[in-house]
Image (cartoon, rainbow over all chains, first blue to last red):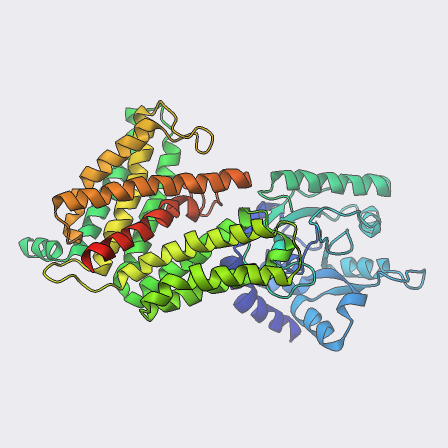
Length: 211
Length: 315
């Protein structure tokens, strides 16, 4: 039921809005894997990010793609929680008071084992300046644990100008979604995070805008 | 056959459409076989350009002929798209967000004045009300660093892409001129065809014999030869479009000459905007041309100028 609502929401509202009002341009669409699961790793400047990433996929795939989202933010009230689950199919994780019992990693692990793909913003929060923040190590744990799952770096520009943090009015800035080649990297957590960062910086260099 | 011929010739819009269609057909044939005649020229870019011209000409004629409200909506959407390309390449501040929202909201309001034929409001709404309101809205954010620069950026965008463009929509609503077959929509065709023709002629003359750069820093591809070749060719070629106007021979050439000069400067001013923002094209919306704004930049200057010149002499 909620997946049907999500499909209707994307087909009637999100698609036309992103295509005609914002004018999102996508580069490297052929890099996206046909097979689930995979992990999309993206920079984060706006709520539009997850919307634009979900919009890259066929409508029937939406139910299998989970944007990983902060539980403290998206569960702050029942309304927001319902909205983000129903229309965006978020996978809520804890980002505060993390302990052995209060660990976000099993949630990600179980989703991947179910065959669901993840959208992860490794900066952990939206950047206000548009600069790339430090990466959290959760993504590196997942890559170490599932070396066979493709990790696709995506750099998005101008999303934070169209809908900045703390703003609810959407403005039409032409945005770009740059999809990189899948990254397969093993090694220490630092190695993995550095490789991801390099992939991002390369994509940013190829983008029309750097923020 | 004779009947169809006289019917087409009797309707200025159909005649102009046929003329443009023939020119496009001719260009398509040239770019199709050009690589055999002159293999050293980059025909791929020209091919893309001509193909895009087909689409642009088709949609423009559709918009102008279907109905008045569709013409107005067409220009409103063009203003929207072009203003979007413009703000995207600018270095806007986070503090400009709400002021930019109001700037976009100006578009439907301005075109509403066009649709309701409220001439005075159409003329003053942007230069008076919008220009007073934008700084006011920016002040509410209390971010003074870069304030004046933001005011200027937003106001110039509104002036060029909303105020300037809406003159084409208003022109299309002007009544026919007594004693002639010319009216608002045929004058609009004259303005747009002559402006675009001038762009093409300047481009072609520049490619063929361009040597002396005219504004090497702002626009390195523009040459003296391209400029004068374009202006003169446009001035003469405009006579083929005289049936769209109430002008005599000399007047047609005078108006076309003014359009050619203004179009050139519209292009150069927008080049300076691009240079300042550090980009080559406004976007890549139109294959071979760059952004939509790269194609219509000359109209920012020619539209208000031609509108007020014809209004002064003929309305």
